[in-house]
Image: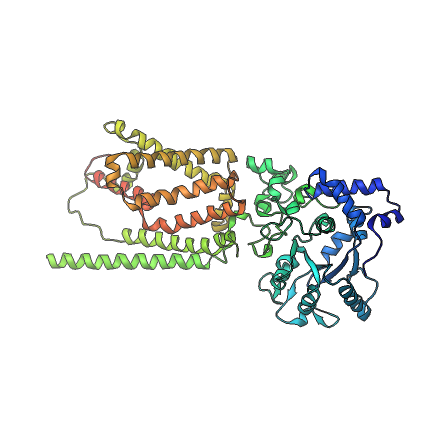
Length: 352
Length: 217
């Protein structure tokens, strides 16, 4: 159930000073792309906010999104946000299990009807409900039932936002994203495989502060984190512009940190904050570590023609069609020449 | 399926199918025709081989015509050379060709490709203006001329827009660029763009015919 303590009281109990809290609010305001004048509004809202109930449903997923969020080192923004909310249901993190856990979820839904946040990670299988169940309840039924009383739905991870890996061809489980099931609630898509942890907590913090989702792009992703391509913020961009590319992993170009376009980097068409916020408290991100971006925050990224094939190579199914086209061209060309020759011969014969 | 997925996927695949089938149809449809028999004795030997020399000797107008044709010739070369360098020298294009054929070669610095790409576009515009303002050219121009111009200019313009991120989101610009190439590939076998093959064959044929008569051109 939602805790009656405010965030500030909770932080004080944990030894976090007011100064520390205000520093956190300033950092969060900046990361959300809000004006500096909003810092006071953010701190006011957070310090007076009652901890909202959050129900986290995990469906067809690898738990990577929860891992990303919880493996962040404390004390961090992620840790603070976790204290700001009342996480009433989460398979991986909760102490209760079985019937007690489900009862906890139903209590939270009843006590906070219309005001709890529903966080979903993982896709929902429609081919057969037996592919993924929790306490005997199919993912589809649990999502539809829990979403009814939610104020908003936050789909975390590419599986929940766009279907993700389970939806990769041939999609044996009939996996679909949350937005294919839930139509009448606001949905915020925090995409990524996994998403950058602060993107998840930033969305939660925005909701706590303003009671509404942040500004979203045409795919439902918060613009603060998904407004720019990784290509536009990549530190290797000068090498792309100059036409200097790594040809293979660990060759001279790779060791010199040249652009990874030829090794399949999809940063040109991938919207995320990896190049700016990076991972593990700003340590690095895939390109910096020498591997091209796989475009994990974009829909259908598993079926875009190959992680190691350059973006300009196309997504053609096979060369069989092209070979058939060649054969057809030869047949039609030879056939038309043969007809023309016959006509010419008959004209010559008639002239004789 | 997004517009980019369509452009890179089925649209490109079918455009290549039509391009390959169409080119082979038109080339074989002409090359396999009968040749008229010439009963006179040839004045030189290896006339057909000598004919290939004409492809290069006729690459620049002869002195009698140079004043009236140099502007057109220079603009055409700027466009063709620029386009060739852009297609064969820009690394993402080389990657595309490698994906299709397995062949690869070193690329040029990007600024070379973009500079020549801009020059090619300006040359195309100059030639269009000439075609529209010159009364004689205008009179003999057909729909094929203008549409072939558009099909050739669109990939260059959209490619430069995509590279410089001018206008819509990058993935939309890239989709427009690839779709314009799909259009070029589909149109290529059916219009005047086939001059890419016919010009070489026609010059060689003319040269061989004259060589047979003992005249080197």
